[in-house]
Length: 418
Image (cartoon, rainbow, N blue to C red; front, top):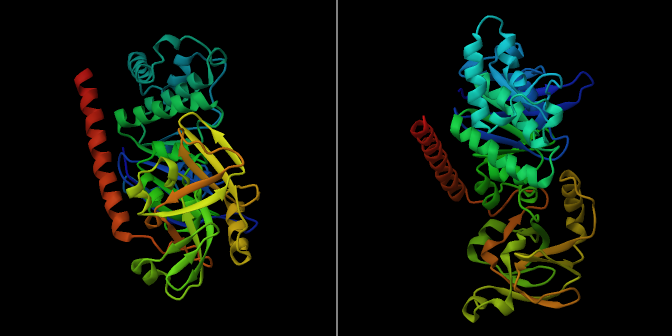
């Protein structure tokens, strides 16, 4: 295991295109870090520079305290798991897993190879498949074979490049838990690239969000969700995504498309002299007034809104409410939508309500939200004006303590099984 440190890493191609723009990131020994962002943001390029498959234009990369910029991939002691598994179709599962060991001719005896392969197979529950060929395996089993090949190398770190994108939704869920379980049991430093924010939020100890080759924020999943530093991170993290509404400041009131919200003294100090802002409210922060106690209703803002479409999902209901945005923020929001791989469709409020709600298509829904949970963004810079540095620091300190405790528990369980 080893820590990985990226300092001002740059990747510029021969045609002058800057794919990665001065990324700095410290990955602790045993940490699981996710690189996430929309297509073309530079996350896979960054991973390939770590493993040595792409040259580093500028900056310094260290693994375990050793500078590795000029080292060949085989000398970096890293194991990479690819999107397409990269298995040898003519070899059995056993031989596919053993392949990296056999490459080091004479270093391992046949007994040592068998021991390492059987350990990897037991870790990934592949014992019954060792004599099968890849063609006879499911997608999830093939991915586990690729992971087994990484395990036997006893690498300093595991690198995953969108490993689950070829699997269906059910298998992706199963493999997420498998990867998390494996990483905790082995305690190996892991860097994982994905464009799927569900994977990012469920797998990572910390998540690094990239946009057009630039690092936007590195924090725990909860830190990104509750304290995003800017409009891009707020829009990327969360499903359904955060709602962005124009907010017109008029004295002690902020006018939203559906409601007027009182401005607290704290918020007023952060707004300064701004007259127009972008307000972010997560879909799950709305509630159906008809399902609330009267005492709670009085503590928030209520409004009526026409529901265009509703989707009942069993555990919850999504209500879609179209609105016209302010033309002065429309350009900013359209650019954000493009950066988030959106389709540039109509502006609409998405509301997540409890499954017991009676709200349906065509209704005028009576809705409620707590204005204290709003986030307010500068429409010019995208900065989160309501970002709380102390709260963000506290969340990440709790996350780090949880990470260490989780590793200790997993490794204690391993010792008790041995």
